[in-house]
Length: 83
Image 1 (tube, helix red, strand yellow):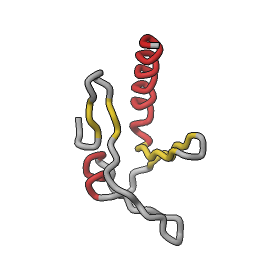
Image 2 (tube, rainbow, N blue to C red; image 1 turned 135 degrees about the horizontal axis):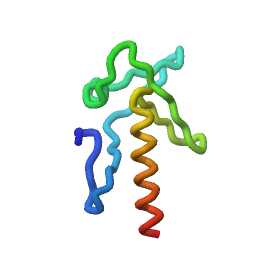
Image 3 (cartoon, rainbow, N blue to C red; image 1 turned 180 degrees about the vertical axis):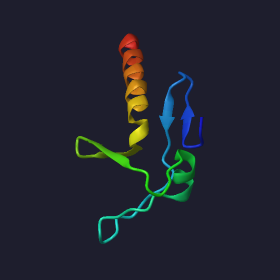
């Protein structure tokens, strides 16, 4: 587990907020160093942008997208079992 997430009492991964970013004139943002380091983001890496309901924005390395989808499917199954 890295510092960007924590696990709650139900053994679920909870994302944490670590920094804010500013959108610059050319629509660019700078990913904070601590986030880049924790996520292993390097110059030249390709990130996917994911949005939902025009409110949530997520950036993810393309080579990690498949494992993230599998993780989310597992979380959804656990949620459905609890409901």
